[in-house]
Length: 65
Length: 257
Image (cartoon, rainbow over the protein chains, first blue to last red):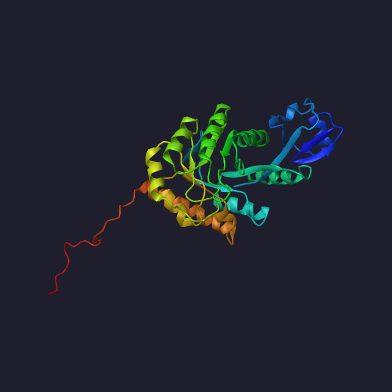
């Protein structure tokens, strides 16, 4: 399926958000995820099934003012 | 003692974590300032999350409270989602709410700010709104549930210092019981002293420290300046007057002619 991850279009066989994170080698307990503009809690990623053309944001801590 | 949303803090200096020459210098600045609150943000991670992880570890090691921001958000929906994602990552209800309205001045979109503040306060967030010195907007933010206000004194990163002392004074008088933190535009320790002398509760700095030739030394200078301004406010200052007043007693002065 085609997903838009952090603005980049890519193909992946991942069916859930957890599988996608694994496939893209994201790791760590400091990540936040959103799908189509809605927060997906850490504990809900395994059950969150993705659809073709879903827009996924994966954010992590960064310096800020 | 400064109290923000029930949290007592010994330091009245909040410090941003951006634009330092290195993570080690950032850590040194935080220690020199004695700051207990640092601001952080969230950004897209491309390297499998490891870069963000390293920064997260540095912040954890500093042992300070974290105030995540929504910097760079231009719409209410962006700011609200960013706040929710920040709560997920940092495990705090505190959020420095920025809804930017203009590319050049980075001034807040105060209409969006009030709307986002209302939504977030309704979802249990403790909102620190980056706002202007406009009293009516500040009233709306308090109505929306904000228990802290963070007016600018000049545009973000401009280092111009307080541009409208009368407005800052008026805001302090209008909200005697709301903690007021000057959030943006401070360039020098004397600017910080000025707003603290007006009775502001704290100052949030970033560029003025991070951009200094020696950020850790500048952080220490700001800490002293903030303490001095606060002490002066608490001590009660003289009002300026037009005419001279002799400080040495006149009575008993010798007459030589």
